[in-house]
Each structure stands twice: as structure tokens, then as C-alpha cells.
Length: 514
Image 1 (cartoon, rainbow, N blue to C red):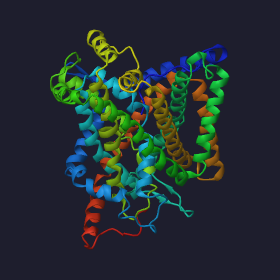
Image 2 (image 1 turned 180 degrees about the vertical axis):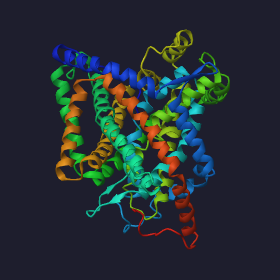
Image 3 (image 1 turned 90 degrees about the vertical axis):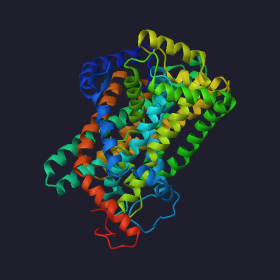
Image 4 (image 1 turned 120 degrees about the vertical axis):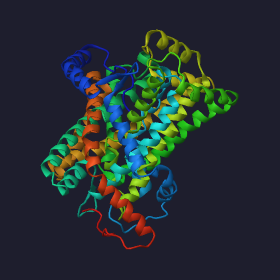
């Protein structure tokens, strides 16, 4: 979703002065936090960020613990999403399908377009295979955190739900005699989620949407080229977001239930067209992906280097292990926490195995001159001089010369759905800190929408870089909680499977919110 090149929106006069002042203030803070969060070690000539190893280790442990539930539970997960086991009388706000689309909308974003292009340029075609593997393993992590999200959620008198790490870190760890530690971890988590929701999940999305729309409407010389147009564009986006988020999770899920399938279909269909037109290149591309995963050329660190690039792209895209998606999944209508764990496993599959892989295949199969040139530069200098969106767009233009307009629609849909979902995440964290009064809820919504406009006018690169680093700091907090609460998830799964077999279970089927 994040970690892609940014385009400055402030390009003149007072706006530039303001932006430069804010960036210069944040630069030392960003540098310090980034150094800590993305601290890397050299393994076999490859620079490996410890946070990536931390996320990967958790995914492997959870996969082994639950005996590859990603495979064994896939059929049941699809049945749940299709509504075959829905219980309209169960506590919660939305169906399994709507909870899934709301969560997917928070992860599927510009990183699926630009970030993947960067990955297959730096790591070559082989990065795709490792990206798929990491996405597959991440499905187990999503199962654990989203099961806990429902297990420890609060269902309020008005039927609304509050869930996610703020709840399972507090209530779950309290059950294990670590009440004080749990409260501290939950507070830290909530503060970071709020900050990222307003900046990376909102400002960045508005900024990149404006940049893409401006690009296809004449650039600086077009009708969106002025500072006044930036403000107007941001205001329109803020109003749209505001109208959706005021209605809460039911309103948000109603929109994402339409947006997510639409944006996925538009984008994947475009990929399919490129692949179909270049069908004769498919065998060679698949061979390059497999062989490149184990014998890469021009990649620092060799096999380990390309492996880390692919795994890092998957981790940054689907956010498995960060806990954020469990906030949306917690709103599901169910009496059994594990059911949403099953559904949540589909999220990394959609985000990484399907959409990220579609992007990678499109670029590899199209094999454009610009991609070849970029790979040659990377092999020679180790640096990537161009943005990923350009490489993806070039691949589509080999078949669809008018694709920049389709890409604009995709970017707008991705960005809007991401911002809406992160508004919900931020709101849940905000109310966990300041209470659930109408004033608290509305104050956050106003702040969020104001920063939508700010994000369109100012890019604030250092602020967003800090937000990226802060977001992945959540992995250390969240995964510690997941390890400590793993016995709870194992018990929930055991009891749910016994329930499905018609056996007596040890959990109260009615009250899953305790």
C-alpha cells in the first residue's frame, strides 16, 4: 500500500515554503525512526531488514502451528464469504463478505501497482515467486490476528462494534495477568494507527490521486495545474470521503463492497488483456520467474537478495502481522471468532497472490524497453531512477495505448477505498483513547477530512516516510501479542471445528465478545 515514489504537489510560492519547513522539521525524526524500524543486517551479501524477518518468522510459525490451514480451510473460507453460513441474528454490523471487502480496500492500493514494479525491477522476475510464497504464508498470520479481533471485540448497545489490536492487546493480555503491559501496548498501537491513518492512509492517497489525474489532464498546463485547482480537487475528495465515513462501518462496507470488486476487476482485466495479447511470451515469462527466483542476475545478494525483495514487497502490501485489518474484520456478524479468521485468510491471497502477481506478470510478459533499461541501470548502479507507476503504465501501453486513463480510474478507486477504510481504522483507535462520544467521533472525522485537503496540496514527503516507518513498528508490538495469545486461537479453532461436527464445545457459542 505504501513505500512508493511520491510526486510533489506543492510547486510554488508559499506552499513550497510551508512544505519545505515541515519536511525539514521531520527529516531528522524520520531518519532516526527509519534507522531503528528498518534496521538491516547483512546476510550472504544481502541487506535484510529485521522487521521483514520478524514478519516472515511469524507467518511460518503460524502456518506450521495450524498445519497449513491456508490450504485446508480455503473451501470453508469461500463458503463463508458467499454467505452460506451467515447468521443474521449474530452480533456484529456487517456480513463476512462486506468485512472482507472493507479490509481488502485498506491494503489494495498504489503499492500493488508501483511497488510491485519496483520489486521485479530490483529483483528481476524471480521476485514474483517469493512474493507469492510470502503472501501464502501471510494468510496464516491474518487468521490469527483477525480471530483475536473478533474474540475480544466490544459489541455496544447500539449494535456497533469496536475491535482490533486495541482490544485484544488490552483484554487478552489482561486475561494472562499482563493488564498493565497490555494497556501500554494498546495505547502505543492506537496512537500510531491514528497518525498513519491521517497521513499515509489519507494524505498520501489524496496526493497521488491528484498527481495521476493532473498528469492525464495536461499536467502543469492543464486545468488542474494551479494551486487553486489542487485545493478544489482535495475539497471534492474530502467531501466524498466525509459523506461515506459519517455513516460508520455499515456505510463504509456498503461502499467498499462495490468499490473493491470493481477496482479489482478493472485492473486484473487490464492485466489479462496484456497477457492474452502476449500469450506466446507466457511460457518464457513463467520460466524466467522460476529460474530467476533461484539463479537471479544483477541482484545484490544473489538468491537471498531476490528472496528478500519479494518477501518485503508482499509484507508491505498485505500488512499481515500489523494487525490493522483485524479492526475491519471485527465488525462481522458472527458468533464464532474463528469464522472471520478463515475469511481473513483470503485477504493476502487477493492482495498479493492475485493482484500483485497480476502486476508482476504483466510487466515481465510485456518486457518493455523501459523495464529492460531500468534493470540494466539497477544491475550497474544498484539504484532505481524511475517510479514504478511509469513502468506498469508502459507495460499496459504496449497493448492499450489509452491505458493511462484506465490507470487513473484504478488509482482513484484504490486511493479512495484505502482512505475510507483507514478513516475507520483511525476512528476506532481515536475512540479507544478518547471515548465513544459523538463529539469524539465527529472531531476525528473532521480532522481526517481536513488532512485530505492538506494531502492534496502538500506532499509532506518526510512526514509520510515517518508514517511508513511508524506503521511497521506496529509489527513488533502486534506480533508479540499474537504469540502470547496463540493458545486462545488454538482453542477457538478446536472448539469451532467440534461445533461443526456437532460435538459439545467448551466455549459459549452465544457470547463471543467477552
